[in-house]
Amino acid sequence: MELADFLSALKEVRKDQVVVTTMASAREWPNYSDGPLDLNYAPSSMGQGPALGLGIALARPERQVIVLNGDGCTLMNLGVLVTIAGLRPVNLVLFNLENGVYEVTGGQKLAGSGRVGFTGVARSAGWERVYEIKEAEELRRELPGILRGNGPVFINVKLVARPGPSPKPRRPMPETLRMLSEALAAGSAGRQAR
Amino acid sequence: MISPEKLFEQIALCGFTHVVWVPDSATGLLERYLESAPQCHLVRVCREGECFPIAAGLTIGGRKPLVIIQCTGLFECGDALRNVLHDLRLPVFFIVGCRSYEAWKANPNHADTARLYTEPILKAWDIPYVIVENDADAGKIVQAHGEMLATNKTRAVLLAEP
Ligand SMILES: [Mg+2]
Image 1: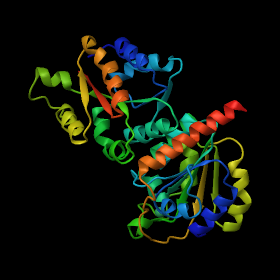
Image 2: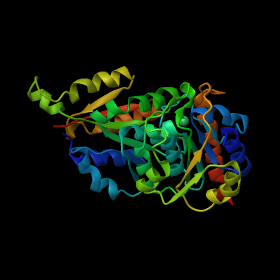
Image 3: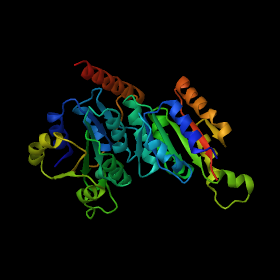
Image 4: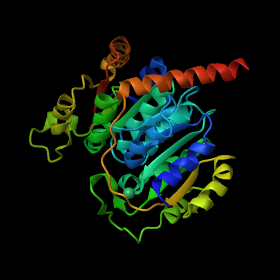
């Protein structure tokens, strides 16, 4: 599956979730959605996207948070899978985008590429809802169900490697974060008022 | 070393909603206080680098996190800290247990180098800090937290450990 297939399928089912993107997904996702609830995490600290999403999920349990993490990013901080499983945030969904390479640095192979099994790692870390998706058709069929019900949910998505440039933020990060904070606060106030 | 009772008293006064931490043998004495603190959630993480982006997410979501780590963890989490404090420009209040601080006072040739690099690292990352050596210094914690709120800039607290 191509990254574009994945992102367009996500765009179709995405409602009012926060979407945190990293690396190649942070570069491409603004072409699909670029609103206050889209946190394209660039410049980033590589490997910390899930931790950032976890913090938002803990702060706002009423709001689903979707994190798109590259496989190299996941390997850089595997421990966070255990942290998340221990905390069990029901509103956190983590997609691991597996292509076996560091895309934005030119396509170098990952350590353990082709040998590491991410769904096995997630299960052993304590995640109960774990999926693996290989084909775009399967993704479109399964995605609505994956996003329903309680998390945390880990989905390994197999993608074709397409090395490309690093993500460039469309606006200064402090402004992105201010917009997101305001949207979350407004959403929370709206929910309480209902 | 400040007592856990006094340390927790100061933490409670600051009104944090979440404590994100990796314990060491000194700050680990806080566990029973943190576990039973009403209105404050304990977030246990595997490695210190996770603390700062988690605190960032909590702050974005309108909460008030505190990070507690050891100085060795401070060394580990440099890039995460740099990104949150200086790229994202989100202030984080954090307490760092400075291992071997007291041992170095007693012995200028102490074998554990953990203390030697702690303050230079905080200075290198442009992080203002206060040093809390004992119970008499406890008030510095609430004061530093007040400064962070007033300036919207990160403050760290260095705890003198054995
Ligand atoms: Mg990759």
